[in-house]
Amino acid sequence: MKRNILLCVAGGTPAIITESLWALMKNNENVDEIRVITTREGREKMLTGFLNGRGNADESLLDSKQGKFYKFQRDFREYAKNIKFQSPESFYILTNKESGVPNPRDDEKDWLDDILTDDDNKKIANQICEIVRELCSDENIRVHASIAGGRKTMGLYLMTAMQLFGRNWDSMSHVLVSKEVEFGAPKFFYKTPTPETVFALNGETKKNNDGTVLTTDDVKIYLADIPFIRLGGVGSVLLDQKFVSYAKVVDQAQEQLEKHNILFNLKEGTFKVGNREGKTLEKGKSLTERDYFVFVMFAYLCWKKRGKNGFLEVTEISMQDFDEVCRLYSKAKGDERGCQEFLLKGDSLDKLNYQFLRQRKPTQQAESALFYVKSTFQDSISTIKNHLKKCGISENYAIKNERKFQKKVEPLYGLDLDKDQIVFKN
View: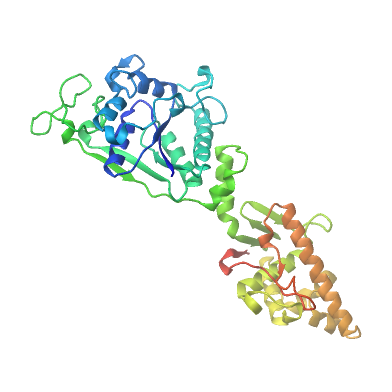
């Protein structure tokens, strides 16, 4: 059975925690534990009800006598009596450290009083991301994230972290209250079983529009469920990696999202998978022009669904196939040419086409010419595979031999990709 954790961001308005808890209770959602991401000032407000010398114990959550969380437990004993919240581990107090999951053993001098500067925001982004990452790595935990409290950036970072690491069973919400208590009612924390008077900042009773005394029964609490994109496989790839920074995780996630697309920039002679790029350089350093042409050609054959969904024997690659690829390739470089003109450009390319090679060298034995062409393809395909590995690109984008494990048959080469995954840029 999963342990249900209500994960909140909170600062000077700790009421969002009990408001969220009340709404979850009304939705019949269990909460086993509450954890709060906060600052030194936020923690102080929750523990004592005071912030910068202003406030009262009955504006706190955890004052031993007047704390509103304890009152909530008494009011809704059957639902809340076993909710864990009082321990030091319940608080993630954000620090001035670059990263790391905040814990109660952190030196108090490192705690952030507030989140104001760009540097503060970079640090808390890393920490919030790590908090969610750690929780979501435990299959026995279900996270319900409340993004209503604290500085706005805290909620935004929590939301982003949930998108990166949240699983199908995790959820997210934003709690809202009716305008009568949205501002200026520091002692309202939830709708009590028996109506209680709501007081303003100055201690006076708040009034309804008709002049009657406002009570907790008049207040409305709304829990806005926030559907979010669970990046699933993206986050799972990142869960087991060493954490670097929030910004780096976002970059990695973007790369994972784009990993299904391979973009060929034909004019520049490059290809790109996500944020990883491969180039055609001088021979011996990277892909030669011949190797790049072979890669483009099989990508084009896959895109056209030639042969068996883009998989063909070398002899099945027709002159028309070559002509289309040559025109696509040369047009991007500003000099469109058909197959005959293009292949005459250099020996490294004319040896890719059996029919063209036989036309140019009619005295060469057919078997010898075919062997030469097949060997040239094999060399290029092997080079491309090794180059992808050096670039950190999955071998899923390499040219495969679908008959690799079959004996005494001709290789059937192709890219095992969908048409929509292949993009050509001129």
